Structures are given as C-alpha cells and as structure tokens.
Length: 367
Image 1 (tube, one colour):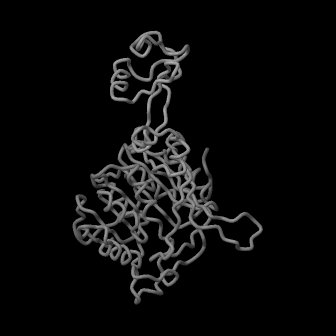
Image 2: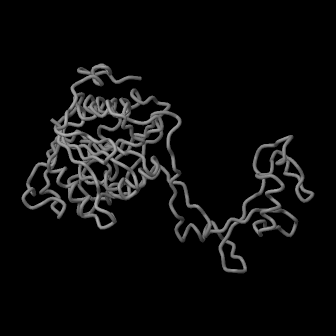
Image 3: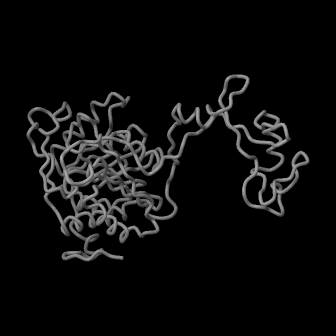
C-alpha cells in the first residue's frame, strides 16, 4: 500500500537534494551537535563514512502551535531566552507527511545494516506516518507500535475519551538488527505470586518441568535419564548430562512420586520481558517544550544499540537522546535548527551531575 498526495517527491530527488556545509572540518570520530535544517545536514552526512546503529526522533506533531520556552521555564534555558520561540509546528496535512517522509528516507540510508529507527508521534497523525514508514522500511521491518503513557488522567470536559498516551513506531533496516532484550524486575506482589515455595535457607523459588513440547526420535533429549523417559509427545529440555549436573547442584526437585522439576529462584530471575505499553510520563518540570523522559530514551538506546554505537537524533530538542547516549557509552550526533534548543542541549550536557566527565563534542552551525 502507498499513500498518495500532492507534492510527493521522488526518492532520488530527495537523496540528491541540496547539502549543507560547515565553516570548519566535521570530524566524524567525535560526538557532534549540529545547528541547522536537518535535511541538508543529513544529506551531507551521507557522504561521510558515518553510519548509525540507532536513530530516535521526536519531530513536530502537526499541532499548528508555536512552542515557547516561557511555557516551561527552568535553569535549562536562561532568563534572557525565556520568551524565545523554541520551535514552530505549523506544517500540517500532506505537507507534514512529506516533511517526515523526506527525512525518514535519508535516515534509512544513514542507518547501519543492523540499525533501528524509532519515531515518536501522536495519535492524530501517527497512522498516516506509519503508512509512509511502511513504504520506506517495508512492512517486514516494522517491529512495534509502542503505546507511551505520557501523563496522569485528566478530567477535562471533552466529548471523547481522555488522552493519556502517544505512540512510538519502531522499524529496523533489515531482519538482522541489534537487539539487547530489555527486561524489568518483578515487583514484590509478582514475586509472592510466582515464587510460592521457600527453601531451607529462606529463598523463594518455583519449579518448572524439565521437559518441553515436541517429541524427538533421536538425540540426547530423547534418551532415558535416571531410568525415566520424557512423557509422550515431549522431550527433555536439556541433555541427560546437563540434567545430571543440575541435579548434582541441587536445582532439581523430586516429588514424592519421583517426578523431577527444575528449581528457579526468585533472586536469580532475569526479570520480565518489556511489553509494548510503556509508562514513561513527561517530566513534571521540563526545561524545554515537549521534553521527553530520560529513562524512556535509555531504554531505547540500551535495547537497540551497543556500547560504542553511533546514535542519531535529528530533532534533538532538549538533548535528552544525546544525554542518554552519553550516559550509556554511545557516540552521538544531534541536529536542531533552533538556537534555543542548541543552548538547552549544551546546558543539559554540561550540567548533568550523572556525567562523570565533561562531555566532549564539536558544535558546528550549517551554512
């Protein structure tokens, strides 16, 4: 399926459009904060060897509003800039879809073969954006439509359901992408519910079968172990030798009828798999309009990149992606055309107490 609208440009025209230049040499080995229109800047990056394992963007949402720093005053933005326009969000309709499409096309080319792309958007325009991203990345590379809980419920009078969420669209460049399975720890209620047994040392545990569905006719998992065979239609989860090792180390519990089950301790549990509904509310006192939660960005960065990976945010805004990258040992490039955003980013990076070293990055303004 494709989305058709007036003014839809050809892919080659987008990739071969005007490029940006910089007053001094752009060192691709260093972190970089680049000021200017992200489209020509990214076209310039295409000529470099730099490729990104991850790109996260939080672009305008076609709201029709102008966002001023005075809406969210804090130490991040100086008093002299308190009434400055952070950014305008006036582009709407087909023009907005094409605005996103052109940038997503270039971003895809900037991704490494193992790269991932996350686009943060709202429910009013996000479904159109998904159709465009399906065109660019392919439906086979669509991974998730993530629901992000952005705020607490509000009782505004409105003839519709309250809106407390937005969405994050997650795509990869190929089927072979970087992925570090994110998990979250079990809470106390979950531990008490899932690990009902307590051993002689006071450790909570549960037990699981040592066999799994699927019958095998040959191989070690079909062989007898301690005189037992797997039940009909099942096989041992591991070889008899490995089961012996588990039993010798006290990780097999035998029932009164001689049924073996593997012991799983609560304090050794690796955590539960992160699902596609995330509760990362916006900061209560943001230093920049539409500033996002730092923990949200750290989750994305840790899941979809490795230490040393390059991360791109071409709508850098307040710099949360860049800070999260620095805290996670990633290299980064941030782009924004707002001078207010650039000041906020520099301040955030230089004043974050969690950064043990002063951040090393180059600042360049595109010409």
